[in-house]
Length: 195
Image (cartoon, rainbow, N blue to C red; front, side, top):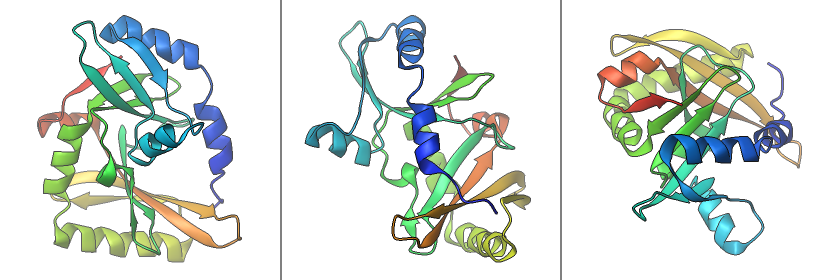
């Protein structure tokens, strides 16, 4: 398994701010679209709550948006990070997210997901037996040094992914995720729109 280059992905995600701003303004009639950086203590707090963009609509409602910008599309449209650090059991981004919406950008399309509905779905889907079964599969991926595999959980096919990461001190940790098909999440009541 190749080591994930987080800095490269971060640099990739910082491209095309203006294009994304125009998309939010055109598709959602958002005003005051602000991209959150690490340039202030307040912005750092927002980032830790999985908020990458803030915006207001024409009625004055304020929205918090999490962005996931992917170079490549995973098997399954919606990738949900279960463990940010599998070995230390550090939960993934969705567990602490305070975002109203999750926007996923791929090379060929962009999706906007109601983040709170996705969070509610995950809370129901990831029961203790399901998490225990997934963790066994994740351990297998790490042991076999594999990036992913397709499994059946609760009657649906999902794709599990593993990303090997290296801390600045050189220690290795793994980020583990589950990829769901967009159609499956829609059937489960998660609002998703293509933008």
